[in-house]
Image 1 (spheres, rainbow, N blue to C red):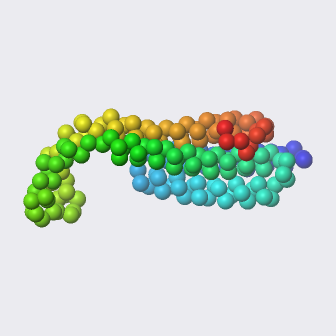
Image 2: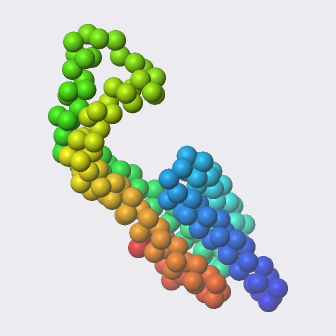
Image 3: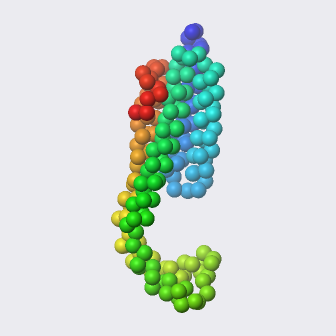
Length: 178
């Protein structure tokens, strides 16, 4: 392999990691547009990594890192789903809805229910403070169960892969889960 080809291959890998890093960073921004950007980037990176791996030599640096990124995305997605299931289970098992009952008493007595944002806000705002104070810990635990495992997994693999790619080194076991 020529020096020029190796440099081009390394740059391609670094661009791929750059877009992957942007996808991960935008996934933690609590805004709908950021979430959409993250999903779109992942949906572009995954087929691009498959394409790059397919056209590269099997033992090349590019194929090695493309395989690593593909594995990271798939296993990271699995970890995210498992985290969401764990967080949702904790939320469903331990949340206390009792603080909302005073606000729901009018509905249970047959009064009309406002189905717009301001109407629902007016209906539930007297109960919201007590509801959040009684369930704040459960919300925090379920959120952490859903968010921390996939971010930790992807973050560690991202740093490991990027540091190896920046030096022009391969990864020993790119298909390994860990």
